[in-house]
Image (tube, rainbow over all chains, first blue to last red):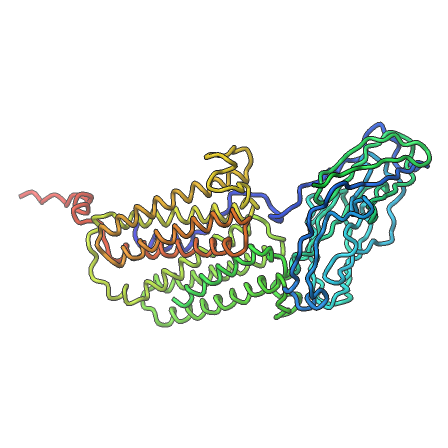
Length: 255
Length: 303
């Protein structure tokens, strides 16, 4: 092969990637997205059964991670000592920020039209988990005097990445498919993390600071309930729901 | 040469973008948050910084192409310069596509590979317009086979870079989290694509070291310092690159060793390519071989 030919070949060589994959290179493991099981209560059914309980945590949670926020002077001024990231938040023996949902529930009532809100304030997301119905709007707001980009990484729904360069900017988004614990991050401020859970029925809850939760209005029947935490192993339990309160607790063990 | 040097720096900056997870810190293109110059905070510092450095390289390439078109008598070199301009424009478009379409893997890998290709083009342009090229003595016989060794080594390095890009942009960088063993074994279970890609990259490293060692040996046999010195440098760079690869894995893809690994890979490719160009310029196929492979002369006419 002549020299000129070799140079020309190299100059034009743009080897195409053979490997597909698509989408972001960093995705959370897809959590369960079970649809309503056949044989259960009819779609659209509501009832008088409630599932109440507590997600407990015994032992010592892992040490929080200290995060430097100096990458953005505006964030630094709001948190001069930095931020502490503690995904395992325990109070009164209960575990906060656990998404609890009924995997095989009926469709229930129509989704609300009032939007849920995901706020960016103090260079953090509030709340940590936004739980909505499929098709329910989510208002994403920037309450900081700095730029944020809002970048959820779903595996089933359509991914998006929007910039919100100014305080007060709002964007409204919806997710049309059921998908649990979609991670949401800001690529400008990598410590920011929240989750969006999109459910096709109304039977779900996020535990409070003390680990307690309530799921109301279930028809009587046999159900599978899942507790999902961003760091700890997912737990699933079966429960028979009768009219009135039905207790269902989960328990996690630390070191 | 300035464009080539700037391109190497740009490759390092581009590596920083991926290493810091800043690829989508600026969600729009070609503007950044609707601005020419956004606040350089957080991930924007890396992503928009990369765009600024790329713009500089683009401008340098425009100057290079126009200057070459006006002053270079050789048509092939002029075409190469225009080719460099086309490549850098394509590279800019690919960068925009990766942002708008949220980092599709094939585009990210193509963006990485075209960067290396463009780097090689700038090196070629620098070399063919250098005094070393224009004042070169007639080529000597390549008895040591340096030309072939260099070309093969360059090809092996490029394939290794492609494997590295595939591994990086499919999230397989830590598919094998231990080193020097792979999942506790010499050969890991090849039951997932990320592990296969990652292990292929490790095997590629062995192939690269072998190819560069052979090249260095042959280059030293040629007794031409223009070849033996960069070939020796390649051995050093290969050792550094293997160490950086190990550090990338053992630190869990810490930003500094990971990005240095990307940049050193480009430096290995660039140096290998330069040795290839030099060997082509200063050496020729040995005359004995030329005679043996030449076609038979026409038969003498009958009396």
